[in-house]
Length: 394
Image 1 (cartoon, rainbow, N blue to C red):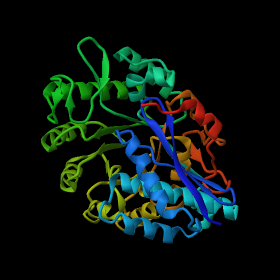
Image 2 (image 1 turned 90 degrees about the vertical axis):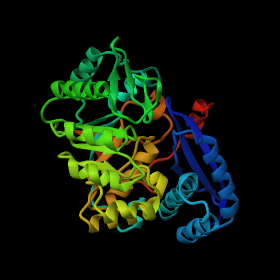
Image 3 (image 1 turned 30 degrees about the vertical axis):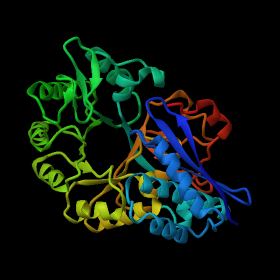
């Protein structure tokens, strides 16, 4: 059996594209994976996949280690970023092929699963309805009253117990926007400072969630790359008055994260934008954050398992970064089933109406938990005829 072709399929997913990798063998087995990037790199990723395809077409798809060694040796001088995402997409597609060839789930090939299900949190909770309500066919959140109604009507009865929101900011006219990393809407300029006005609005947001969520449900707050160290420091101290499941922050300087973690009474999660063990190493070795977040579709299964197992040595839990399609969710679930230090699973609940149409298996979420299936490979396939209806045109 040999690799016949490698290509990308880019699907419209509303406020971002879903980018899939499709690897076909000469005996008709097709392996799927995802490398979604919503940060302006769609064409770059597709071109990178096309270039790497030239290296591996004709190779044995079951010899994953050999193919990875070849790809990493060819790209050693341009590591991380788009290269890493592309290599990971190819790798994860090969695991799907291997599972289908052996008629086993990927987790069975690697020793068997440790769990059948995992607690989930609702990612971009409220955020999506502020910035993309029309794209996901949901009621728009524009005002405090809209958000209150969303909490009472949707979150309370959702069956989910954990919700992660971003910085939803309401201006003087009660019109909401999502605060973007590095951009201050108040001053209409690039700015990583935390103003007193912005701080008050963030605390108002948390007060609203806490007031309207039942006591048995927990809030997670994602600060992304929004503030410099002084701003993070000031805000984290104020957030010590709130009982949050975790606060998520990003920085290219792991000492910044370590300092914030030491100041925070809440758990700090970080790492979703890191690539390969080499970038995670200082984050883990220096016990920088309380939770290590790993993007399985950007790092590949082998590298993700290496990072998780190293984190486990330092008694640090991990969690997958997963705001993508059902395919990514299944890939991340297989990863979670193979490590014993996973904490919780990220899933976007609000999404485009055709999210279920483009796959042949929809992950089951019940009573706040998501369940593995026992089908071969990743246990899910893309429905390519449906994907053709939703091409990404940007």
